[in-house]
Image 1: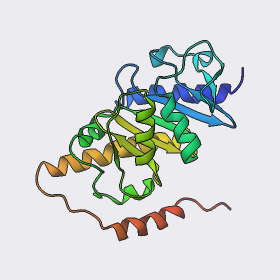
Image 2 (image 1 turned 45 degrees about the vertical axis):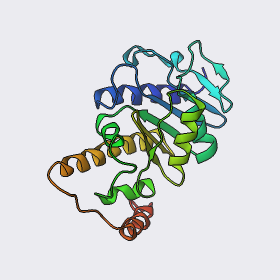
Image 3 (image 1 turned 90 degrees about the horizontal axis):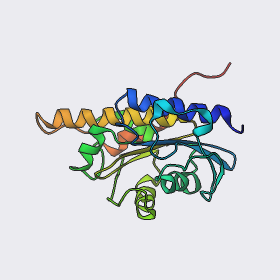
Length: 212
């Protein structure tokens, strides 16, 4: 079986989305790229029932090359993230706080320096029907020079070099949206400047442990 490790990682992250309350039921989807193949969650299957062989492998044109189940209906978004934005992995959630913010704003306000990890203010993509090329196009526009975006009236998309990185960004984005929504209930939240976000982005580039 090809890409067994990647397929198992897709299952693990899909189940974490449920336990972390970023999705309900079979909503949301997950994928990871290995060379010219993508392992992606199937359409309409409960995550706790998934087995390694249930994870379809598709090529970058969307053709299923291994697996019995059909891939997620949101495959056009995933493939667009790979071909147009150089993603190594994609996580799509239906998280509550981020979706709520998308009904009120066109981007996530700069309430915290963690936004620098996304390349700047996270944009809200124009609404389009799920699973359509129009949604993939709208997402791509909002994702330009960013590591994540919110889909209006829908959910979030985050990308990363690894599936763990993409998923951590999904969780962080939900927290950022909750932070703004919580503060906005009490008043007008103070925001960071674009210059400070750019400075933090530079610092993030060198953040972490230095190899010995």
